[in-house]
Length: 304
Image 1: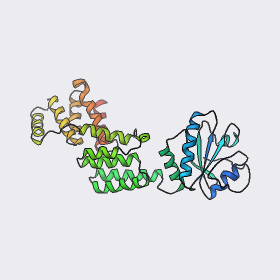
Image 2: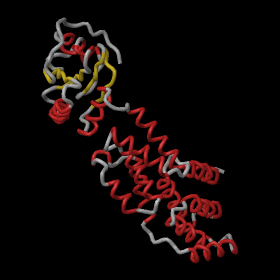
Image 3: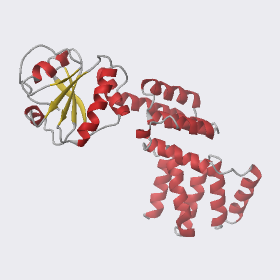
Image 4: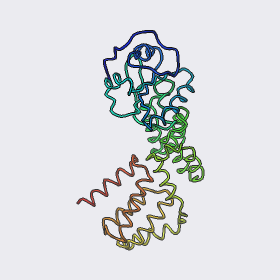
């Protein structure tokens, strides 16, 4: 974002939270932002989401203890800067550093995300991109079977952001890989309510749901394998074998059986194989190699 912000002159303001105007923008925002990040909240009295956001962002800024400042501008009375920044809806929040807008968001975010935003722009923790890279590294370790390394990497992310959904979901997967579903559920209980719908969290919940079934013992699984080997067209036996493998956490083995069923009869049992297959993809994680390869194989069957 960039704009010609040359309105007003003066010295930096000392207030952590204050109202301002177009005319005072230089002294209240641009100049102070050369020393400390300044957040600008564009709002209006008639805006419901603005009234929701206002107290939350003010509290978060005060809790930051002077690491950032907040300037609030009523766009009904002061439309000039908002127009220069091409604000089309409110609330609109911009973070200024060194006289320029460097970050921002639209709408009334929950408190946890506002705190993340403040931490990010204040430079007191890893950036959002850095946290994502840390989570990706941890997931790679998990995929490679390095549960200890993955656990340490996820924990490092959670030190910077205790409610990070990707890290909490990943740590839950570590416990799930260890066979401790109770501990995995306990980890997920720490996901903030406003981040509970994150795809990574939903994926682990699917994995827990699939793992909740009592796994067949080795002899039962061996018997199902034998039935499939003796009669590869026995789709019922293949499906039961897939269910046993899912309960045992063998996603790849389950995917192999379910894709075989789909290849033999796409419509078998009201597409039961395909339905379970999609659940297994979700449980394994959309970025996992098992899921990516399984989706490629499924697409080849469906679109051949």
